Length: 402
Image 1 (tube, one colour):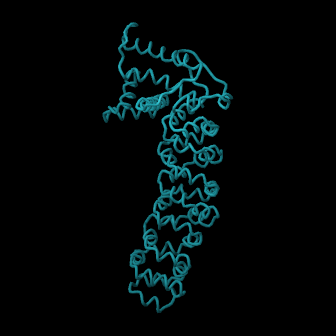
Image 2 (cartoon, rainbow, N blue to C red; image 1 turned 60 degrees about the vertical axis):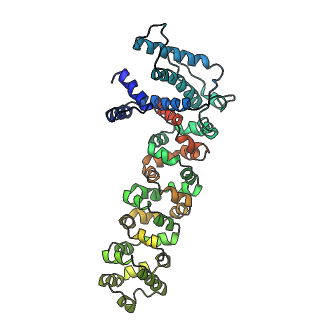
C-alpha cells in the first residue's frame, strides 16, 4: 500500500467517511502495521482535543523541537502534494497530519520521557528525569482528567509498559474495555481476590469455556458465595440427576421443589413413602439412587432449593456442564474459591464475558506474577486511563521499542 492511500484511510477513519471496503482495507493495515495503529491513536486523540476548549501549554525548551517536527512534516507534505514554497493553502486533513506530529511528541514526552524527534534527528531525555520535578504536569499538557494524567505520569504506568505480559494482555481492546469499568478494577484490587487468581486450580476454571460461561448466570455465581453450597455442588450424583430430562423438568414445579426441600430437611429423601408420593416414575427412580438422595440431602443445597432463580440456573445446560467439569470440583474445594466468591465485586466482575476471557488468557496469569498489573490496578487513574487514546498510543510505542 502506498503512503497516499495509507494516509487517506487513516484520515477517513477519523472523519467517519470509511466505506465497507475501505474499512476492511484499514483493518488489514492496522493488523499488519504497528506504526499505523500508533498514528491512528494519535490522530484520534488530536481530533478529540480539537473538539474541546482545553489548550496545552508547551513546557520550556520543547517548543523548538515541536516546531522542527512540524516544519519537516510540512515541507515533506507540501512537496508530495505539489505545493510551491509560497503557497499557504492546505487541506484540513493535511493540517491534521502535521498537527499529529506535534501531538505525538507531546504525548510521547508526557508518557515516556524520551520522545522521538523527527526530521532526521534523534533526541533522548534521561529516563531518571521522569521522576524529578519539575516534569510535565496537569497545567502543562491537558491529557484528560487529573486522575488519568496522574496515572500516565506514574511509576506504575512505567512499570506496566515494561512488563511484556501486561502489554500483551492490554493490547486486546475488549480486555481494556472490561478493565476500564471502575467496578471491575475495584474487584481486582481486593487482596483476597488477587490471592485467589494466583491459585492455579482456581484460575484454571476460566480456561474451560463452558465452565466459564456458567458464571454468566448471576443466580448461580451469587449462590457460590456460600462455601458450603459450593462444596455440595461438587457431587457427580447431583450433576447426573440434573442431566436427567424428567428430573430436570420436575424441578420447574414449585410444589415439587418445596416438598423436596422439606423432605431433605427431614432426611426422608430415601424414604419409600416419600418416593411413592412422586408421580413421575423416572423421578422416583432417580431418588431411589442412594447417591442422588444423599446429594440432595445436604443442608446447604436443600435450603437453596427454595430459590427459584438458583434452581433455574441449575437446570441450564451451561451450569450442568460446569458441575461435571473436574476444574470446578478442584477449585470449589480450595480456600481460594471461597475467598474470591465472598467478594460481591468479584462476582459482579466475572458476569462480564470479557473479564472472564481475560482471566483465561495466559498473559493474565503471567502479568499477575510480575505484579506490575496489580500495582496499576491499585492506582486511582488506571481504569479511566484504559479508555484513553493516549494509553493506546503509549502501549503501541512501548511494544515497538521492545
